[in-house]
Image (cartoon, rainbow, N blue to C red; front, side):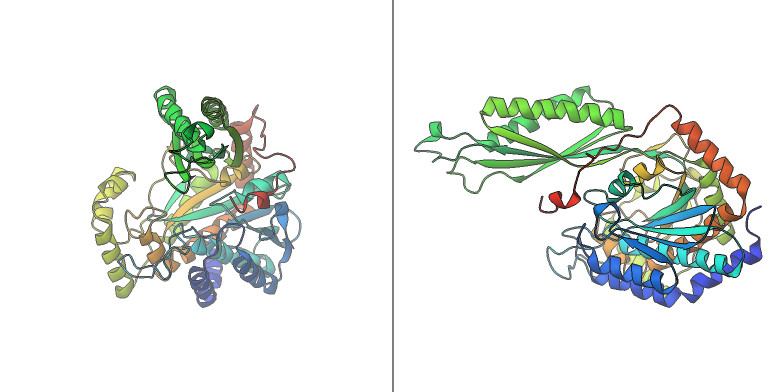
Length: 474
């Protein structure tokens, strides 16, 4: 049977009692953003709270210094949650409704990972207290998962068996509405394509040079012609972070960075092979050398409707969130800065759109999308979902229509978003305790997982000896 209402009330009381500490930690992470693989202070602060609460903490998981697994309790079932805490480059921003970086060019939490890590932490602490009280039995794990925005820390943790022995995981992500996730997302590969040629004076001796930039441009042109022949759901994007230093010097080095997405790993790998062929052909045409490195690779998500429904029931139990006048004023100003958000609102079910359009913060639980839907994003949680039943949801931490990786998302993340993080703590705690208390629910989630993955063997996109720190300077 699911956990009784009285026990869930105690879970929510635990989160409420931790409100000040969790809020202070989320603000500290917001004020001290750290990039992927460099989240040393963030990892240490999260671990310190868990260690103080009595969790056993294993560090350096997956060969990543900032990755960790914290465990409390004993025996089965074993349930878990995940927390991210890396920031994004170039998104420094004050908590105001106009573009105003704290430090131009510095990182900022544009994907809300200061909230992500802390919201999951609150859920884990509440479950730990429930185990300690004897309300439920089993083990709770908190997975500290770094570098999602770069190399995908979870993929390395999966490769090294960090999720073995876990029966189910419930996780979340900041967003602008509250909804359980029942759909999938795109698999992705990230490539660095580096061309090396020969420099020369571009006017006096062009025949002596071999342009790496020519090869990069030929590669990009080839991919543009390729677009006509890829599936509608595929996405290919690129930038040229390096292409020479002066117009009168034949560029000896040029780099193209690619993100390649498709609904499943097989589709991504086919596109990656095709782009690899194009890059190698471009190098031959320009008579330069090429080195192609896959810097990251994620799987698509395996949906789990059983867990999505359990999450939805707990959202319905909690109801809408509340905000004070100051919070709503900031949210309203941020909404105005976004302009027209009709396209974003159109992504949620029709029966919620009118109310969302009239709100600065929309916090009523939203019906989840159909399990057949494929979200146009990618996450290293996909690889976790191929190991263990994974339930996911979004919580409203940003004003209506706010896109991730925007300065508005950063501005909302210092104070406004803390309400959503604490809401996420309660949803995580309630759903994980349902799984600990209800063997039938856990069995149903496992059965769905096995049905969706039958006959499909997971293959890590990583080489057995892949080292994330080889990529840290790229």
